[in-house]
Length: 431
Image 1 (tube, helix red, strand yellow):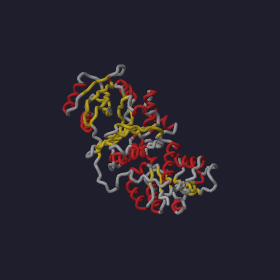
Image 2 (cartoon, one colour):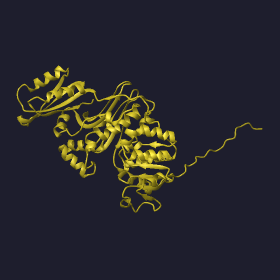
Image 3 (cartoon, rainbow, N blue to C red):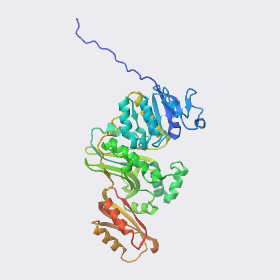
Image 4 (cartoon, rainbow, N blue to C red):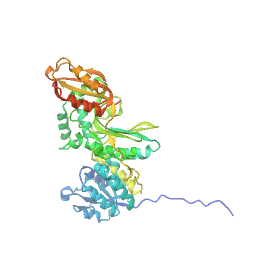
């Protein structure tokens, strides 16, 4: 009698079709519906769409089988297996996602504020209820950076993260650089083309990027961080002349989000900074995004692409839906909700660029040097362009590496000087 083991052919079993409900039929929600409608996936069937004033949102290309509703209970009590949340903001999104998980529905979201502020709690709830919470679209839109950080770089120990995380600010700054226009003119152009909201404060003040950085820090550095713990500096102080001086220094200016963790101390900030022209941060144009992960062993790895817009973000949402339909989960992405919090500081030590506008007279640079020297800050170089009136003369001083907090205190003291036309403006120089 043969003792050879009997071989059997094992066939892949296709997952059952999952019913999908979309909360919010704005730019991203509509794009998700378009992909599901025009490029149908046998694993996903769009069955419900929720929006306020829903009758004004109906589209002719959607299936007649879709239930359109403005009652959230129609979604929560439905046969939908997967909920796509694209309404944005913290409330009512948090409450609706929480209820969806409790009712046995997995959730895919592109909501950065929700994940940055309540993601750890919701991840724990998803685990406890046997559901999934996926949020690959919450950072960098169509760039699959969270999955890459969690799985592609799993073999390294990441110690830093940096990037261009806000497409609105990047568009404004690149337009200022390329066209020589003012901040206000570049912002108006961004609003005209739909790259900036009517109220752009969350973008230009750094709040949007801070939420994304908080998520990246939790995923990449395994440290708890909330957006309000990130030091932010608005980009509104950047002037067109700063790009001229930056060019002389071999740099350009970008809104840079960055964090470093040495095992004990966490540094994080979102601020305009001078970056070398050859760096990956400088290469990003328009409303593109880039994320650079720094590993102890693997060095720097960059991920770039379309960071905003309906279709790129929708692609990330659909990818998460497909992962959920296959039962793949990203529940290990965020640090545990009960992990010990680590205080974050924005006190990076770097070289700095400082622009002054003064009523010119003899001795000004000597007075500035004396005040800086008293705080242990050394001047590296002085740059001054010709052609400006002496009643409002701009010039730049670059500084050797110093702590950001010491420099801010020094400039606060200096802001009372009688020769200043306006307060000094400073940006870190990243190398």
